[in-house]
Image (tube, helix red, strand yellow):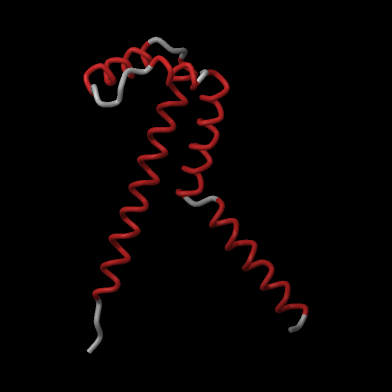
Length: 110
């Protein structure tokens, strides 16, 4: 390969990785990671789990989650909200990608 083709290939590779690292799914993963770190730095998760009622009793569990969310600092509420939004976005992307993939498999050419 010539020097020009090497330079072009490097630029194409750089653009490819820049687009991949700034995609919507990547940003959702970054937000999930950062908000999880923020949550663990402000909340003692083992203590929350120790105080949590049984998972089987959904009424008490939902009341506990609502009370825990309502009685925390705004930073923790924001971190939890960002975590929920980013997880929902990632799940939506995965479902959309899998449904699009199955539709492409069904296409047949005569």
